[in-house]
Image (cartoon, rainbow, N blue to C red; front, side, top):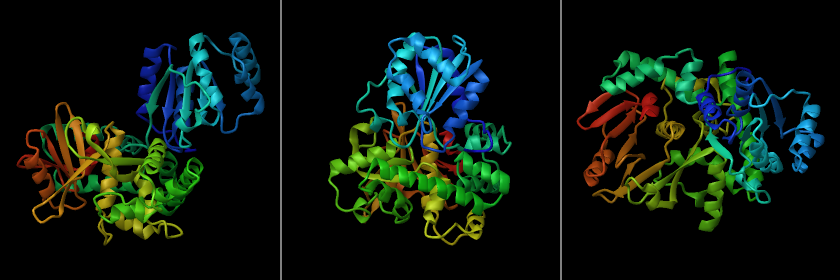
Length: 445
């Protein structure tokens, strides 16, 4: 658990749920492990309620589990609960928290009766070992509202750095289509590279603030990755999910126009691979970007599920995984990455962070490829659906501003395109109809 408490956007969404629901629904917060769900919920319960009860189902006692065996007498249930927990409950002023609820599905099933009773609020958290996998023998309560939570995004990172107004300045620059100037942009890019290196896992962020030691941060991230490895092995005992997960950096570095599962695992039937990918995506540890065969506002209708790219949900974890062959990622590597001085093409790292930022701001991921005149492929890295139009995005890790794929795509689908973006490392500029956008502004799209 992180030793620091960071400001998170999900807190405001929880406040909105509390005010609007008035006890008529429970709130289920889904997300990968170690992204700060439990810390956030405890903070919310302490700040916003007169009292709260916490069930942590990763270490709950047998006696506490028996509470949920019989809810035919709700009054008796609450009497036993108060005695077991030693907490006074106040009607409409107390909340009961079910942390890691996927570990005890019977408690999740109890939500229906508890919400119908109406005396208290209920918040659940669930992670990695799929909530959806552990519901075979229970009735899923329809009284749940789901809030998806992610690693700290760049705005949350800026808050942690004490830069409360940083995003407001970026929004103004984007609205006016006017950059900050090259000197300011270089500083902003250095700050952003620090975010990429440390990532948005609160435990890693806290370690960085405490030590400023990248090797110590890297050890934290390795412990999280090992936890994910173990959990993926639990949800897929064939080991294929874990193998696919570990191969993400090498797959992206190969610059292929799709993930090649056959180079990682034995030949797998399409249906079985779909199930594995669903479990991985459901775990919230990865973001999957599918090929849209017909890029239009209804991209789901033309998704090619056999053609996809896979990204880590946190780019800090991605960088550690990319150097997994070392006992720890040497400080020199981190410093060179921070100063943009490592002699390797880092395009795949920037592609991963753009995917992360798009997902955290509420977008689903799609990409598109099509042949050029030389029988090679043009590739548009991401497609966003906005109203009746689409916004194509090309990602570059360097400062050059050529965008042949983007131009060819916009010529091919001119009637479907409104805004077009090149995301790169230099200052905000216009190049005819294309907006050249510094990567740290991605979440504003």
